Image (tube, rainbow, N blue to C red; front, side, top):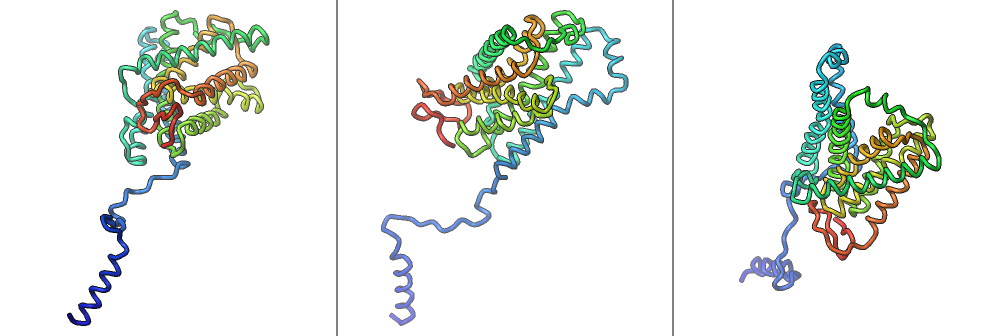
Amino acid sequence: MTSHDTDTASTSATTLGDVPRGEVRVGPESEADRPPRRLPGWARVVLAVVALFAASSSPAVLALVPDVDARLDAWPLPAGVAVIVTVYTLPTLVAWLLVRALMRWVDRRPMGETGWAWTHRSARALLLGMAVIVVLVVVTGLLVEAVAPTRPIDPQALTGGWPLWAVIVVALARAFLLQGIPEELIWRGYVMQTLRTPPVVSAYVSAGVFALLHLSSQGGQENAVERVLYLAVPFGFGLLAGALVLRTGSLCAAIGVHGGFHVAVTILTLWCGVGNGPALWVAWGVVTTLAAAWLLHRPARCEPVSRFSNFEVVEGRPSKW
C-alpha cells in the first residue's frame, strides 16, 4: 500500500468513524429541495383583512347601475328581492375565491383545511351555532330592556313596509350570505388554521382582530367611547364562533353563530321592541365571551374528531399544531 492509499484510508476512517453503526446520516438539503417559506403570521392576517374588505365591498357594484333605486322600485317585489339576494351573494363568492387563492399560493395547503366542506354533521353544527347564539342574544336583550331601556328603533324604517316573507328572505340573506358565510370563512376558516399557535390562542387572536375591524362599523354608535364599547359584540360572538368550531370540528358552527346573531337582533328589533345602545352591547359581549371561555377551557368529556386536521383534541384539551 502506498503512502497515498494509507492517507486516504485513514481519512475515510476518520470521517466515517464518528458515525455510529447502524445509523444513516443524510447530508444537508439543497436549496431546491427545501419547501418555500411561508409569509409570517402577521402578514397572512393582513392578507385576511384585505380579503375581508374586498368581499364586504363587492355589493357596491350595484351602485354602478344608473338609477338603481328607481329601477328596483319599478320592478315587482319578488324580482327586487331576487336582485338583493343575488347582490348579497357576492361577498360569499369573493371571499371563497380569495381564500382559495390564499390557501393555494400563500399557505400551499388544500382548501379543505379551512373547513369548507359539507359533511353529515354540518347541518347539526349550523343549527347548534344558531340555537346557542339566538338564545343568548334574545334572553340577554330582553333582560337588558327590562332593566335599562335601550334606544328605540322604528321597525317600519327597517322593513320599508314589505310583507313578512320578503323581510325574512332579505334578513336571512343579509345574515348569512352577506356577513356570516364570508366573514367566518375568512376568520374562523382561514385565519385560525394559518396561525402557528395553539388552537385556543388562534381563536382569541381571530376574535380580537375581527373585533378591532368593527371600530368603523355603523351599529348605532354616537361617539368614540361607544365605538370602543361596541367592540364587545363582535369579540364575544367571534370568540364563541371559534370555540364552537373547536368543539364541533365544523366551520358551519361558526357560520351558525354569526348568522344567528343577526337573526336574533332582527327578532328583538322587529317583534320584541328591543332597541340599541351601549348597555346592550356590553351585556351581549360579556355573555357570549363567558360562554366561549367556558367552552374553550373546560375539559372535554369526549375527543371530537375535527374536520380541520390541525384542530385535534388530545387528552380532553385542544392540542398544539
